[in-house]
Each structure stands twice: as structure tokens, then as C-alpha cells.
Image (tube, rainbow, N blue to C red; front, side):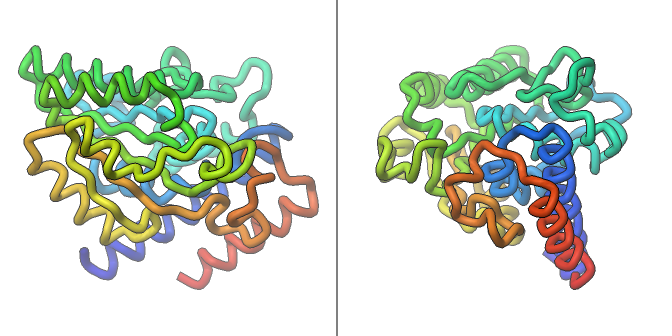
Length: 277
């Protein structure tokens, strides 16, 4: 990856984080922590990796992204807005009555959303179905999924993983956003799915471990994943609340919005990061 590409991705990810904060503050509710942790992954996918066209969001040949951790919708919306699927002004309508930006992704009303998600575990199952369809009909698109580490406590995740490996769905790549925290505490305190890599491998997947905030590592992992003959889980170590000092690694920011003063601090911090790039 050349320096300019990396710099452009870093700037875009910072803008996505700003969009996340705008949205959850305007909604006075939402999930900023896990949205901020997955922002770099979504930025790379939508701005570097995926075959998509904002002017034709339902193109049958497009790559698909399923946000299985659907509560991180603010990250997906901010990414889609930055990519040009809709105006970034819409982020200020997050969770408002009449807005097409609901609390969880809605494929029927939101341009660029490939699957409605929210009930944890179901998104990866839908992604498996999409990948199976592509294999069955000879389509060339890839399916990407983003899961939370707390989400791995859902049994449905492992049913889907078993099926994907059995059907040799090499066109399926799943990112696990391993930030170590969920709504009730650390994943280790609640119901640890560790070791995540060994579990996916036992179900027949290839695994790759990366720093989920390092664009070069994300790129290298995807290049390797696309050469595999089986589904691949990219286990991305991340920081919950990444980019906002008082949110980082704080479980309390899983599902609450910042107040006015906190909003100003968060936006000022992110704008300073953007200006420094």
C-alpha cells in the first residue's frame, strides 16, 4: 500500500468516526463504542476493496456486506454517507421517526444496506446464504460480514460457520471485531468465546489475526483470504470507542449517546486527528 492510499484511508476513517458521533448525539441514543471500533474495517471495505457503485446500490453483481453486529449501524451509515450513497446530513436524522436511518440496518429503505440485521447471530447466517447463492448460480460477487466478539456467544453463529465450511464457501470473508467488550462487561467475564481462531478453525474455516486499525494488515489479510479455498475469518483486534479518548476501552459507551459537552469534546478530538493527517 502506498503512502497516499494509506493517508486517504486514514482521513476517510476519521470522517466516518465524526459521522458516527454526529449521528448518535443527534439521536440521543445508539451504540458509539462498537461503531468506532469497526470504522477502519468498513472504511477499507467500502473505499478500497468492494465492488460497489453508489449510483446503482442494487447492482446484482456487487459485492455484499452484512453488518451482523447490527447495533453498530452508525458506523455503516457514516461509511455509506461518506461513500456517496446518501447525504451526510441524513446522519443527523438517525433513529428519528420517518428517517430511513433506523437503529439497526434496514435493507428495504436505506441505500447501500444489503441485509437488515440486529438480532445477533442472524446476520452471519444471511451472509452464508448470499455466498451459497453466488456459488449455486455461478455469480462472482463476494460476501463480507462483520461480527462482534460478544455476538460469538450466539449458537446460531456456529451453525452458520459449520454450514459455510461444509459448502466450501470460499467467497465468504467474515471480520470479527474483537474489541473485548460487550454490553454487560468484558467478553471474558460474560461468556468468553476465546480462543476465537481455534473455534473457527475447528469448524473448518481459515483464520487470520490482525490489528483491525492497521490498513496495511487489513489489506494483506484480504489478499490472503481471497486465495483460500474455504471461508475465512479475519480476527481483528480493535479498541472499543477508538478515536475518542474518553470512550476508548470503556464498556459504558457500548450503548449510550454523548451529552452536549462530551459531543463537543469528541468532535474536537476527531477534527484535530483529521487536521494532523
